[in-house]
Amino acid sequence: MITFVEVYIHFVWTTRNEERYLASPLFRHKVQEHIRQNAKDKGLIVEAVSVQPNHCHCLIAFKTNQTIEKLMQLIKGESSFWINEQKRLPVKFEWENTYYAVSVGQQKAMRIKEQLEQSELTDGRLPYSIEREWKKISGVKRRRWRRNKYG
Image (cartoon, rainbow, N blue to C red; front, top):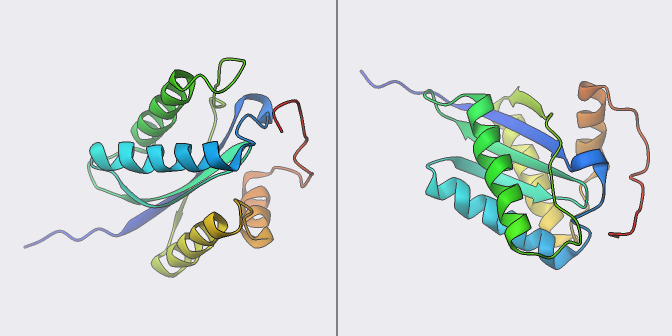
């Protein structure tokens, strides 16, 4: 008998203090592609990823032998190391220690995937609906992302 598991996890995490370290669209794209490739190299199934100036969305097809904590360690830890290796920022880059993770059904996962992929075509802007939903579920109050010296 074959075991079939179809679980999708929508992750969101922010830069340290929600600073807009990733303001450059070109650099965001490079970070996004790096996260994809690194995840693939580690056997993770990243359905979609969208790097924003001060946060990141990632939709992952969850395997039975994975834990949420390990997934975040692999993605966040390695990507912050890689970002710092690029020496594109005047300060040390860090993600916040916290993250948001929620399981979503197949239909919702495909809708999130579509929205995250669409954000790549619209210079990184996500549809308001996906941001609103994340803020509602995570308890983050709606506010404009503040600007700083990075963008």
